[in-house]
Length: 135
Image 1 (cartoon, helix red, strand yellow):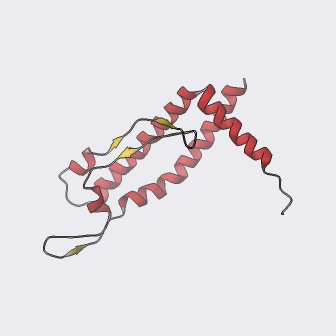
Image 2 (cartoon, rainbow, N blue to C red):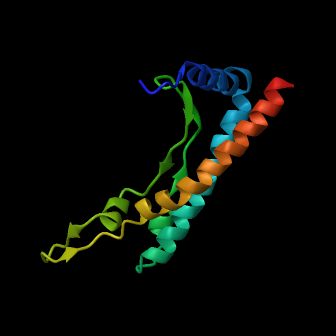
Image 3 (tube, rainbow, N blue to C red):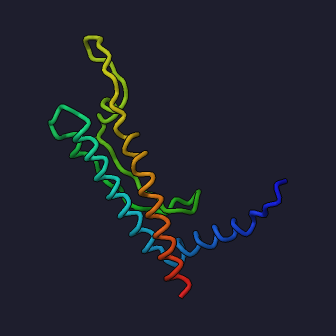
């Protein structure tokens, strides 16, 4: 192969996940709640600026879900619940008159924008986790 041994990195990854999930589950849940709130705010802001009809129902129905431990991946997850009619705004659809309305793709834009910020926050969280866990 290429001469790299990844088993030590895999062990480090497992150790960090174990530290986060078993030793400090409250900090992990708290971190996921904070990140969920951040992405919810960004989604709401994107919906406010990207959609011209201002009834407010689309933005009001965006909610942060609960942080929970997903057993298949042994990692914490959080959901952002959208309005049921959000897909009509986000993706292309036809009106009853047959006119095609292009999608705004707001959710994809916010997701791409938030990915960089989330990566930085995760690295900071891992640093804090290692500082607290190893001391």
